[in-house]
Image (cartoon, rainbow, N blue to C red; front, top):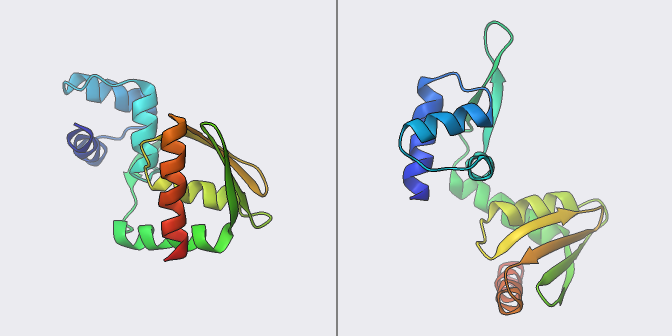
Length: 150
């Protein structure tokens, strides 16, 4: 369903000047997709959509042209370069980074679309990720260690 919805989003933004998440949501509902604004927001972030200015001073969503493989390599590199350590407190994963790198590392982790991560917050050198369960937290830590140790 997500793939179909995101394909439809690409079609919609190619064929229409869509300026807001609410407009995009309305187009999707009209096309038969039952979506919330939060879903649309996640799709925009996942798909790396951005806004450009149009004639008349308005803005519209467009898709970036970076390949997924290139982006994945960049995310892994940022994670490896910024990572210092991680620990858990039940279903909260705390990741320590090099000073000033938490935002970039957090964005890299978010871009990995790890379903078990409900949300994340970054400071200067610390990231807190809310994970669905304690067991998922252990699995995410293993997954991240595997990526970092490659």
